[in-house]
Length: 366
Figure 1 (spheres, rainbow, N blue to C red):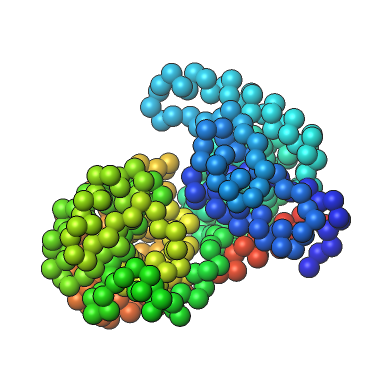
Figure 2 (tube, rainbow, N blue to C red):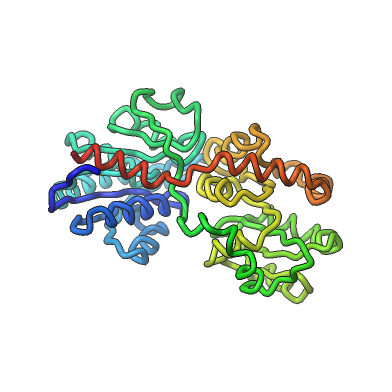
C-alpha cells in the first residue's frame, strides 16, 4: 500500500460503449475503497452512454464534443478538426480546474484529448487497453502516457514494451462465486432442472446476426432438449419477444443479475468484446464466440482467436452461420469437448485485474 495525500484528485476518461465505461467505474470503485477522501471526476463524450451510466454509478462527469473519424467519408468528418480543437481546449480547462494527481483512460473518443493534455502537463497517466488489438486512440496515446495495463499477450508490437503490464480486464466481482449459485439461478429464471440451458448474449444493444441465427434455428435447438435464456438487446426486444410464447424460451432486453445468468447456463453463445471475454474466462463454461465483423480493425475476431487458439472456446464467424447446427450439435453431444473448453478458458482468468491496475495507479501518484 502506498500513502496518498488527503486531497487526492482522480480523473478518469472512457466511454462510447459499456466495454470502456465499466472498467473505468470498476477502477474508480476500487480507488474509492482505498481512498474514501479522494475526489473523482469522469470525462466522457457528449451524447454517448457514459453521460448516463457514470452518474448512475455515483460519479460526476463532464462531456467533450468529440466523435471518431467515420470510416466512410461523410459530412460529419468535416467537423472532426473543430471537435478535436474544442475537446483539447475543454480538456485543458477541466484539468486546470480539477488539478488531478493522476489521469486514467480506458479507451473511447474522449480519453484521447483528455490524456493527451494531461501528459503534456506532466500529470501521471495510465491507460487500460481491454482488447488484443488496440484502437487508434490508445496507440497514439501510448507514446505519451506513463503506464499501459493490458489483458492480452503480444501487445509490444503496438505499445512501448517498457510501459506494458499484463493485469487483465476489470470484471464484476460477483462472478467469483457463481459455482455456488446454481440452485438459486435455476429458481430465479424458473428453469427446468432436467434440461440443459443455452445462454445467448449479444451485448447491451443486441446483435442482429445472433438474434437471426437463434430465430432460424430455434425449433432445432428446442428439439435437443435445451432451454433458452436469450438476451436480444434493447434494439431488438420488440422484434423477438414473441418467442416467449414458446415453451422453454425466455427473451430479455437486459440481464441485470449476470452472476445468476452465468450460473444458470450450460452453454453460451456470445459476441467477443473484451469485457465479455474476461467475464467468460471467470465463468468457465463452454462458449461459442460469434465476433462482430463491424468493429474497428475487426478486433472482436482477434480477441476470440486469442482464446480459441488455446483450445478454450469455439469460433463461429458471421460468414459461416449456416454451420451452426454442426458446431453446436457437436458441442452438446461431446462431454469431453465441453470439459476441455471449460478447463482451458478458466485457466485464462485474471480475477485480480482491478486490484493490480489500482496498485499501478497508486505507484504513479506516489
